[in-house]
Amino acid sequence: MYPTMTRRVNRLTLMNRIRQNLLPHLARPGRGFWGWLALQVMIRRNQRMNGWGVDLLMLQPSDHVLEVGFGSGATIKRMARIVMSGKVAGVDHSEVAVERAARRNWRGIHAGRVELTFANAVSLPYEAEQFDKVLSTGTLYYLTDPVVVLQEIRRVLKPGGRVAIMVRAPAALKKNPVFASGQYPTYEADEVLGLLHEAGFEQAWIADSPPDGTIIGVMGVK
Image: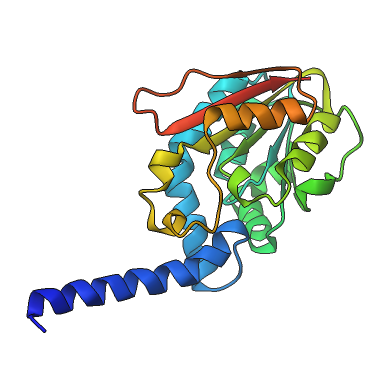
């Protein structure tokens, strides 16, 4: 085998090993190196998408805000800088994510303005009509029943409350070797819109996307 071909085979073997080890942790980061790496991937890949989702929600200082699937907790911290007299809550079904996000947001938690909970989004641990705004970024692909989760989001929203669902466009995700395996579904904008309608959001729309078209944002109002 020629040296160039050998290097190419070795590189493909390495990528396959990375993909096999990383995939289980993308949906639920666990302990150890691969869980840590999954959270770093989320921070890097979702930073711009998270920022756009926060902008779309037009947060106010007195809002009560929920993030479903907060991962590293970076967006929780970002929202807490805006919501100074309200509250920012978050749920994630990864204990590791909750622990690391709590360290990142310890000041807000200590001040009583941030609350992070280990929970599954199919049954949000809140009474009805608790939140003004809800954000979910890059989590839709990992949900086994997205309509149930969206119904739960609608339940905890106050009347007139707003949700922002952010995902990467399928064309952008399929360039990613992790998603190229087909293990996780991808969603076009009209498919996300359809899920919101199915969950009971009669008023929902596709937000204007960034010029490169790699990010999809869909809004709903209760």
